[in-house]
Image (cartoon, rainbow, N blue to C red; front, side):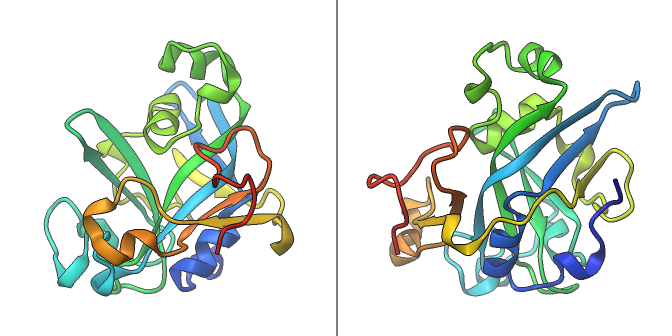
Length: 206
């Protein structure tokens, strides 16, 4: 199946975060083994104005340089001194917005994912941003790769999710961002068991 093209990614981050749901994230290992999963949860980060974004206030460092690339590039960063997390860059070059991939539903390569995670429950393999990066062997070596053209990490079309199936909630783990922590910028497929954490109601929360 063909990679998603640049046009798909070149939209503002909220629209991209919703559009990513249902698409297939693919990681191809050095030996050609393919690991893949359906994206079921995302978070939007709105750039310089967003207190929770790594690019808040126009911050530009070696760590977040990939956020300033063209839409459709990967921004992979290290956090808490132990975890990798993957974002998909949105919009256009020089505009540092991105969407965090929070959870995927495993589709291919589950045995290897279990080995990488040292976990057996399918719903515990990729139900969080650090979990999915560990399961798919995503690390700093993939920071800045072009998801449109790269053969190691890319997205396939999958199936778009209807608006009525998308639940909305505040982002997780960004309490330091003040009012920005409460904004409804997390999106997930309602009722999907692979989501990292559903809203308390189990449904949409605006």
